[in-house]
Length: 386
Length: 143
Image 1: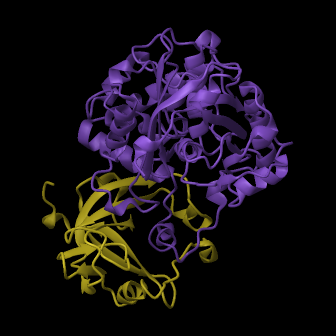
Image 2 (image 1 turned 180 degrees about the horizontal axis):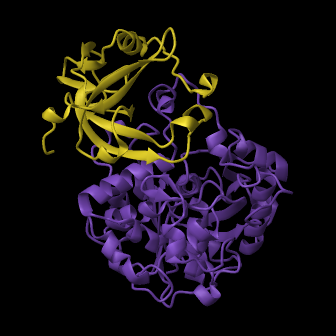
């Protein structure tokens, strides 16, 4: 089947659940809360849903969410490929809707990793017979931060990128979060606080890392035709691509600063028939500050090695030369383990003009980019309101 | 230090030759006789050409640091009293990259491009881990 057999779909509803520390709810309950919110946003009923795309750390999460909400979906997809999973779900939902396998796709995510006391993923006991169990785990590599610290070392070695450059990303995120009532960390953050936070995996410090929060999110996907009759202005998926390079042992990836982002982004832009210069709203997965620099370069928003200079002087923040991650991002809005769905929620709100104090003046076309695992796979999506 | 908390590999049929070689103080890698290249970690086929004509060959155990990090937080309780410790991805002279701890080397001397050689650490009756250390200074050259 050719990709041109895909029919246009729209994001008709978005919502997040309670965010931050939510000790009274499970990950499943957070997903359900977000799901009901997204359906209300779209003006659809629970009984309209016939496709579920869901994952928590429960391997049966799609079916579990269906049972929990009393649904009997015709199509379920629990693909889990790290932080980008929910954006990949949008592409999978696009295929399912195009093929008539479902008509109203509900995409959800939820996690209680903050209330659980540590990163849920870190608590997973790796099978010592897997490639990772045999050839990574014995060496005490922190994951995923260890890999991104290694990328930061490489970037520093090749281009002279400094911890100060990395700090700019964290500072911009906090300034956006201050404008977002839903963000978890809104108090001012200073350069000194970032630079004096403890080193976790050199050169990355605590403030180079995303937050650890509870939270959930949900999206409702329908055909563009159907979306036109729903409650909110439809946000059309104009272009979307996903690519895969490796899992948790990236030993065969030739250059850790050329991780397949460029090809993924180009495929999404080509599908949308637009260029980078057309994009008004940019949401880039900010698990670690270095990840944003790496993505900016590979996405082609600046040249290789120039991301440090590109982000200087508050360029990414409110009023800056290249505002991104207007929610406050994983660094300051919240990061319940996998952030992809929250990039999309913010992009949709920006395109609809719902963002209040943090609303960007131009908001016709958005780009969301997320990697999965440890620069293992990539998704880029172009959203538009035309 | 609690050795029981150390995550140790459990070999499979596919990887047993690697671990048996490590126990004997060798770094053995899979070599594809069809496309004439080495690979790591062990696979059922060549990841470049798909061939199953793989044989085990002994590496010289020499390479360069491709990249690294120095951990200031332990990934497991066993590593806690080793902090700070270095984890490196090493580009072997035969081509493949692999991970190891960089030991017997002052942390301040670690840099991308540093020439390293294998060090073998027996950790149980069956398992000997492969690590790396800086090659003697006389053999260092500019990367």
